[in-house]
Amino acid sequence: MKQFRIFSLSVVLITGLLYTLSCNSCQSGKQTAVAESYSRVSPDFSADSAYAFIQTQVDFGARVPGTAAHEACGDYLSSKLKTYGATVVEQQAEITHYDGKNLPIRNIIGSWHPEREKRILLFAHWDSRPFADEEMDNRRQQQPIAGADDGGSGVGVLLEIARQLHQQPAEVGIDIIFFDLEDWGQPSFEKNLVHGDWWCMGSQYWSEQPHVNNYKAAYGILLDMVGGSNATFLKEGYSMQHAPGVVEKIWSIAARLGYGNFFLPQSGGYITDDHVAVNEQQRAPSVNVINLKRDTNTGFASHWHTLSDDMRNIDRNTLKAVGQTVMEVIYTEK
Image (tube, rainbow, N blue to C red; front, side):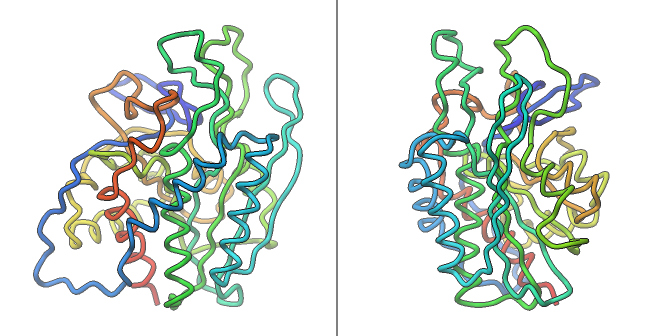
């Protein structure tokens, strides 16, 4: 999702060049030693459970808005949040896109303890890209992608967190949002660029018209492409601009838990993603946890926006590192 130096919804500043990007994975699965002085307070995050949630999404087929697979997967996500004790609200609307077509959006919002004033917002996009426009073979570029990592991984991690919240509630209110229509930005094979904000349409819609009037959260965490092998999570630019303290909190906890080989203390450029609108509308100072690469042409993992974005790329070690870190962040809140 996002786009490369044109990546669906992402703009990355790398060595002085502005890029639009999407997301994906990369880094070693081995956990570093946990600091002896740190005692974890969060429940044990199950990477196997998160993996199964991703597999279920992929089994529906490409979750392209307006398709039967998209509708069925949306019903599944809404049902799972309700099963795990959330109060669920859905936003449904139509958006006129870059090509003049009206596309449906379905934002799915689950809230735990909606009466609590202090809230943490967790979010990911659940749609998958209708174009494999990073395929080398242009005959395959108009095929939709499975989106196991780009979309599916963030949702899978959040569903496992939702399952844990049902078993052991956090002390603060939690909102999980699955944003729609994130990854339908104009494909790179179209030569006539239509100017506009065509990425992250669901988060733009919610940020302007939240499900609760004057919604505010203490902070937000976006998970995008958080399932790939050898993932490297760098400190993304808009995150540092709007929520530097939250970035440091997440990266510090990751290091204490022994996941410093995933959460690297390095800058990763600016990515246009779902957290941008959330930050701009001041709903929550939000951080993007996204797999960024310095050794690929796109700045993302090699399977980004290709037909190779399938379950072969999903690594339980990465899911564990991200999921346990995010859970520790929210369970330490008072």
